[in-house]
Length: 181
Image (cartoon, rainbow, N blue to C red; front, side, top):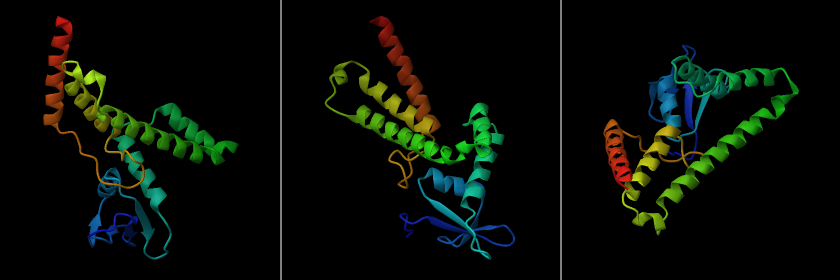
């Protein structure tokens, strides 16, 4: 059984292939992205030199997703990042980004707690439970499997197309009820 408290060690061989030391098999960048989405920390090292290549590979994963149209970073943010490398801001930017993502994770977990909190006076409103479930599913899908509690942890349940269809159906029912009111 894998120890998920420690980073998953990936070794890069001279052939540039990536080797998962826990499962003793080769992995791709997409596999590594999957581990990270599941909340797992990874460390990628060069087998020969022992150099830590994690940052390089994480940047490559981000670049591949951005180039496929899965844009998360607006152009002006990317521009500011490039500028930060040539200005005195480069010492502030890493801490700012880390704090911003920590705040995002905290906000997500608080919203999920608030949506689940009972007793809730709104619970008596017809359709409230369906709306709460829709909001929860929406938050999960918006965060793309990002761990709600920060750091490593169990994978978030992904929203399936059946769940989305059910949410759309419930939303339509809620809209009908609201229009009648």
